[in-house]
Length: 425
Ligand code: ADP
Image 1 (tube, rainbow, N blue to C red):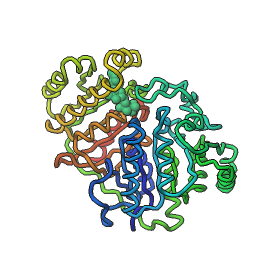
Image 2 (image 1 turned 45 degrees about the vertical axis):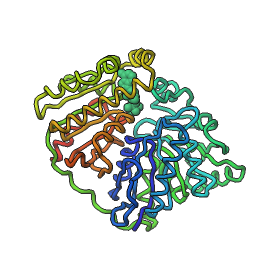
Image 3 (image 1 turned 90 degrees about the vertical axis):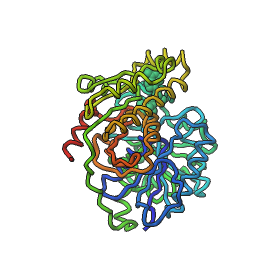
Image 4 (image 1 turned 180 degrees about the horizontal axis):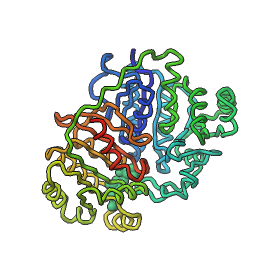
């Protein structure tokens, strides 16, 4: 049996979130960091393959080329249906990359319609009348309006998508979705008949997502947040496309040494860092200091910690501080300095015996996993909705790692994650 669903995610945490939700059904899910260099081998591929790219904020042409390469690998692995996964907060710039990538995939697959459904009700992301909400706030009034890389200044998904695509956008609203899969299919056909290629679909609750999945699971391409993909394994099981799901490997015993590395400045991460500071040895990274003197002071601090001691190193800062630093260094430069320092510290921590890694921040996670040389992961237990522990290999060592994007997880996420691992081993 080859790949049943080939998934392409625009960042690393998004990919683990998706893989975790697919794995809830018990099916085998394999997550690959970047397009694998080797051709797929039948014995090695899982029914659900997720390829994690790092193209959320890449130039459009680069993002499109990368996703085409991922699509090609997944097709060679046998996939006929595909899922383009982006953030439940629709993180994108005026140019892309959500729309241009979807359009390129549609072209490759010879299909002229897809859906856009970033809703994730469990995490407070819902879509009503085409407008995306975070909790009770329209996204453009939520803290996402101040995101360092993709500030969201509009809440209407059609309006966000329009400048990103050549084709026509349209809406299948909640009233249609609430009437069930057949009504939604009819609406999709109606929109297709008037040339609408890009259909935003409302969803405010998990029931809506089940209806959407049931109506759309046979389409060659679906796009959205991870939650709309969650019902797909069940649907394939029911349809008989997949028969037996390989069992998840039990949690391997890794060492105790743990490090939290946080490069996310999202509102929730700021709370999580504040909650964890009294519980661990901590070091705050200052981008201005990194720019002037490099990361040596932080590395020295880490080297001086007791082996087995739980540490947190964070660049997490309030919006005013981020703005001040960005004004001085530039957005990209500030981001790169922090990412490079956290990546270096992750490598140091591994050498010093840390085997449990908690990473906060999508971009940050990409930089850290790359530095640790992690290329594939097995999906394990979920810590918070959409955030699983994963097992992987780094420089010949077995490690546990969790990648948490900005606003995910409860306030006590960092300690909950480590406690969960203790309970498993
Ligand atoms: P999230 O998942 O919350 O969006 P990311 O890691 O994807 O987090 O993005 C946060 C970006 O902000 C990263 O590029 C990071 O390096 C950068 N960053 C982190 N701390 C600071 C800071 N104090 N000042 C400026 N930029 C920062």
